[in-house]
Length: 115
Length: 115
Image 1 (cartoon, helix red, strand yellow):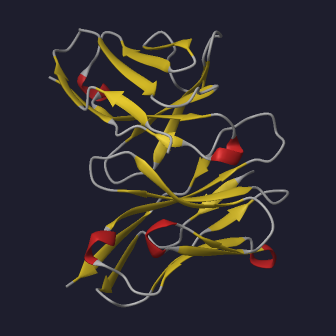
Image 2 (image 1 turned 90 degrees about the vertical axis):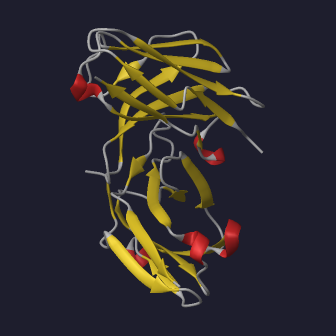
């Protein structure tokens, strides 16, 4: 079945530094990837939609300069949290799809802690 | 506006008992419908999906869901719950023919299973 690998699973960084999270579709080509943020005991909040070779589409209220998304190939999208602050600490999840008929395949998530 | 409602935030059942998790959606037409499960600190796994046809859908791990158009519902069921089913369950809808693959997630239902 479709597999999405997300790395790293956990990261602790100092305030003011940048962190890159990778999302790879291992056995399929993902035309679209999504990045979500999940607060404790809450649902997933869509941050942005990423299409290969084009600029990401950010949801309202998400700072595009803070959360840089690059979708350089059909199997890789990256989310870079720039100048991280403690309030950016959260669980970030990516998902990939080749179309809604196939559902989404989710990565295992990245727990970001900014100290 | 499109929305997904999961009325039950928490549900506790005894192992071996039956389970029903409720999901109601608000959408102009019949969307694509999904149920996902999330274990703590993990990404989401697709349990089942509905696009059209038979309104009773079978999924993995012994789950099934029934689409009821008249009630705008897509409730998830399992006849006999196992302790390993304890997790967070999310209902999601995806618009049909909207040109977007974006999901709308419900707020989730946390399932606790008593031994």
